[in-house]
Length: 172
Image (cartoon, rainbow, N blue to C red; front, side, top):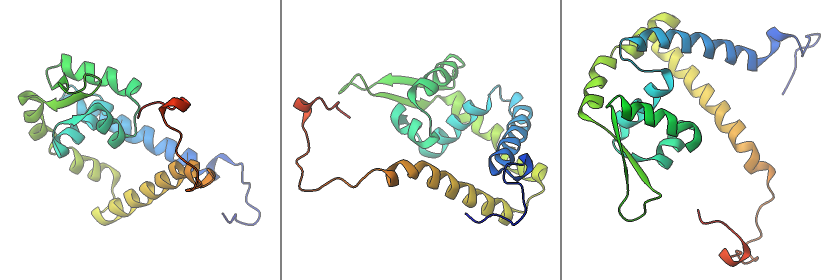
């Protein structure tokens, strides 16, 4: 990455991470106001967005969509279930798999949430096109940072046999 000549690379105002952090805090605070009438926190809203878009999912699929692990997701789901907005059911074929689905109340909440994206767009004073471009840039940053671990790993030798469960590998 190129650096501007003479710029203090460690100055707070030159840190991309700080700009992302302050923007995230500002947006999350604004969402808190918008979501108060729905009785949702921002993370709960994200769960509902995924369920409204994709329908019933497993906890693993939901965690993947939201980039959250099950330890973070489980308390959110428990609170949403307690509020009557989702159901959680273990799969008959494998009780380790938990399926999550919106209830009728959870599905109806979608209509009340319909104006939230427009309210956010107004508050940011971004055009639809600039908001889309910003989202694409941020998605690219996320992919690059999350993919760095995979790029750092040496490629697996395809001639080496895959060690089976007897070698102590956990089942995925």
